[in-house]
Length: 343
Ligand SMILES: [Cu+2]
Image 1 (tube, rainbow, N blue to C red):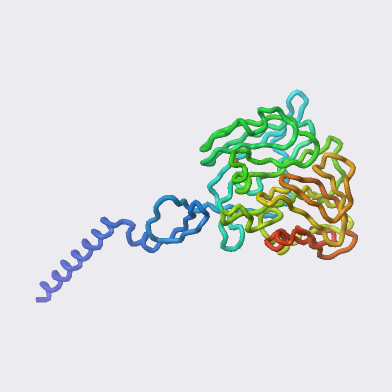
Image 2 (tube, protein in one colour):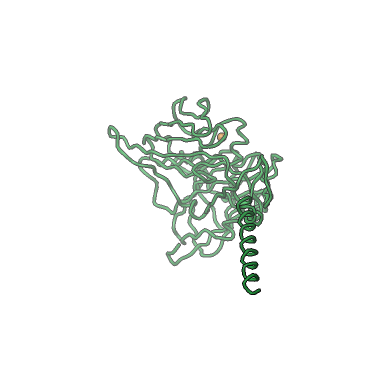
């Protein structure tokens, strides 16, 4: 009786094991897949979290990491070599149009990027250097790089359209004139390609250089996250309110030089007001004599210039758009003036 009962239990166990194995064989990932939640982003920027099956048109999230502190004082001089006595600066710039950035807490936006960020890298050279920019378009759409400044027609990035999914073009021209210029994609509809983030700053230093200073770049930009051709967010360097929460540390009595470029789409003007101080302003940075000494400049699209100032008192000072709508939607920051020599 005991023997029969034991073999009965053994048979039952074997049957149970075979049955469980069969379930896993037939549905190898069925049980785990049920629990696993995935995040997708729709083509209109909506974020979908689901453990169910997701049909086209959606794609998996590829989030952009952008650090406005790093961007502020990061200048890219390229791979430097000498050819026939001329300094050559070579850059590789890769365009993408499938990334997503959290513009504001919980607000995701499909950014189009040069080298993975908005704005793209700040390209810097000295007047007369030869620039060689190896442009690779890894996006789905056509893109180009159009530099403001002087160069041959075929290097203008307008008529030489670069196809997506690996299209390439090499831009080669001498840097000039000295100043601060934007670069941006110039494919139609231009408004869309710029508004999504395909722009950056191109600084050309004069041969004789500029006086030593704490140098930084501010790109004034905005994001239309609901696609009504009006911006919902504004910023200096892409993240609304960033420098208000993370003040830019500068030294008392040290010359500060800001390369400022207005890339806001949809709005005809932007402006910049500095508190507790005035600045010398060099429109486009092309002249060595400042045009004005002011606390307020007005900039239309792609208008840019160089601001220079020193603070004689320590403390916190706002800088912001005096177009109040823009500052209340994120275009506001703080300089923290210190006298301990640390930044
Ligand atoms: Cu484009």
